[in-house]
Structures are given as structure tokens and as C-alpha cells.
Length: 287
Image: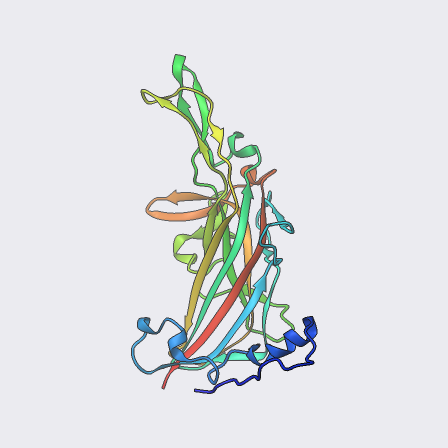
């Protein structure tokens, strides 16, 4: 194992920001690879003996704002089909990262988000709108709590220009037609993570709502996702990766098939804020 040796401060040495930064420059590592990252630093217990890491890379998502002082807002999509909104921060592999036969590309990401449900959840036509019996024989509106924002992965398999992003293997873009709706089968959501669009509650009394439902205080929360690209037949070169978001979506069912479909009525006036996160990849192979 290599060892870094740095001498002590001597009489007459300057003590300022520049000199102190210089003293720690030996410990700065800007590029993780198979030579400076031990296999044990990754989740080794999940793998059989013989796996090695051949490439690692990370990319900042959004703005570095741990106190949420700087945020980016995504508005709900009110018409479909529509293009997804890309989260700020695209990972580039330059001339391309080739995933060879018997290699696997593992992708992980996280982001800090805060949804704003707006007021159209209880508008006629919204999939999130639901009514309960209320005292006195009337009805009161309540949300189904099924509305979500959908985050998923896209990659560019064309060139380093990164102008031809498409959904990754196993993932749809939520533009498929399901009768009058647009969305994905759940089988086509293999790179999808969702975050609830609202949090409503009400006080029930004998199976009825005793009062109007209330919007809970939806706070900032962390969301994460993962996806894997194994190659068993032929190699695949990837030039870039990014996280995108669409919303608002709602569960849907036709026969025995379950979907996530776009809800344009609910989306009107709804929005989502996000700040900082990270996109990371590991490429591994068997020795």
C-alpha cells in the first residue's frame, strides 16, 4: 500500500489559506480507477470472487445547495406526448465507454426534491381526484395519494456530441398510448423512481369524512434510483448518461396490466423543485 509523507510545519513557514491548501494537495484524488480504488471499497459482499472494477465516474446533479437556497423548478406537463425535462448535470464519457461482453455497467443516482401539488388535484378529470361520503349525506374531495413525479435514465449511444439521448434498456418514455392515456407499463419502468406529488389527509368518522381534507406539509426529501446494463452477447458503447423527470403521473390499470399514465389535469399548476444530487457509475468484469 502506498504512503503519503508530508513534513511538519517549520519555523518561518507561512500559514495562510494557500499554504495550508498546498499541504493537503497530496491527498486530493480527482479520478477514481482500477489502480487507486480497491475492490473492497465497493459493495464486495454482493459479488462472487473474481469481479474487478474497470471504471468509476461521478457527476454532480443540480446545484450544490445543502440549505436549498438555490433551486431549479420543473413545471407539470399539461399536454402529452411531451419531452422529458433533463435534470441539470449530464455525465459524459468523452470518446465513449465500452461495456464489453461479460461486463456490467451499474448506475446509481440521488437528488434532493420538493413537490408542489398545486390545486388541480381535485378538479374533475384529474386521476388523483376522489370523493368520500361525508357527514350529512354530502361528499368531500380527497386525493388518491397515487400521483407521482417519475424520474428515469437516458443514455446516448451515438456520439460524444450528446445530442441523441434515448431511454435506457428496459425503460419507456411515458409516451405510449393506453386508450386515451399516455404512459408506460410498469414492466417498462426498470430505470424509474417516483416521488409522491402530494400528501393529503382527513379525519374520518364512522367511515365518513368529518371535515375537508388538508394538504400536508410536503418537505424536502431525498430520492434515488439505480439501473444495470449487463452485456452477454455483444459490446455496447455509451457516450453519456442523464436523469430526466416527467409529471404528474398516476397509477392506471387495464385488465391485468398496470401502468403509470400522465395526468394533464393534475399537472396544471403543479411543480417540483430540486437541488443537489449525484450520478455515479461502476463498470465491472470478471477476471
